[in-house]
Amino acid sequence: MKIASRPTNRRSPKRIFENVLKSDIARSFLRSKVTILVGCITLIFVVTALFAPWMAPHNPYDPESISVMNSFLPPAWVEGADIRFILGTDPVGRDVLSAIIYGTRTSLGIGLASVILAATVGVTLGLISGYYGGGVDAFIMRIAEIQLTFPDILIALLVDGIIRSFLGPGHHGNISIFVVILAISLAYWVHFARVVRATTLVEKSKDYVNAARIAKKSSVYIMARHLLPNILGPVLVIATINLALAIVTEATLSFLGLGLPPTQPSLGTLIRVGNDYLFSGEWWIAIVPGAVLAVMGLSVNLLGDWLRDALNPKLR
Image (cartoon, rainbow, N blue to C red; front, top):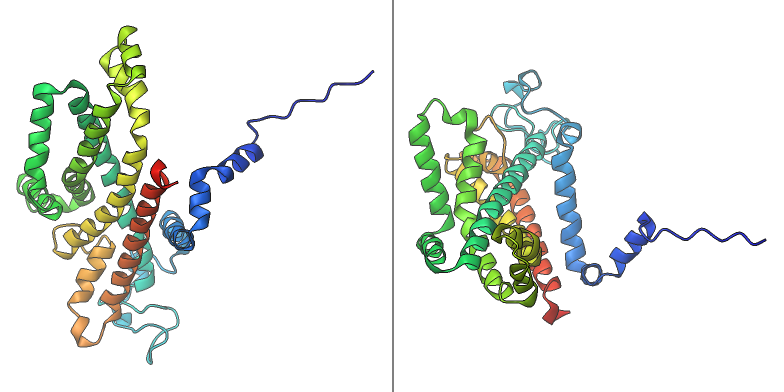
């Protein structure tokens, strides 16, 4: 008697991995050498941010590991360097490499949190505006248009200044990260709202939405169950591009002295501290974090451009 063979599991991890490799997005990614390069660079930044306490040679938050006697030491390839500090030290003797690793973690965390909050607000308002239309649509879009007349960095500066005035000078430092996240997210929610509204206007007239209305489904159910899954593609593209913009905005705010305090290393605060010594010979304090910021922003931005093209069916 022949024993029936056991059917293979179509949901096995191996089968899922093979299906992912055969997808259009995966083929588009593997076809472009530039995309693979920037993807690897972005992955390095993410891994560095996640495992900063284990990858950093020193802890920039630990006073016991910082000595003023080690201040202004040059990078390891310059004469007079100390091999313990590969990228040199800053004015207080803090290891620049360790500060950059922790600063990357802070900058990426703030950028990601800002984009998530901006996307939540923008997608919600965009869905409501596009689905209901009428006066609700006009009200939300007029606010968005007024905000678009100002640069994003100016909106972030305005929000940060208003929060500072309410909190007072002694309390801002304790919640500075949350203030920066709120300021950046309120500057970028418009980008999500306008795209989501335009997509919702197209999708809400299709048959599957009309069928849900005939079935007497609630508006919230239709927006969450039917419209939201069909607008995630454009939202993901905007989120990726805005992540690079949010990181640069945080660095700009910190460089201007309106973001994080110097005691909380981010790429912006490191550049601001190093800017005071740029022309006195200690160039590495500002140049190295600036180069890291430029590479990170460019890599994430190029990934966003690739994702935009990969999700466009006309370019496949």
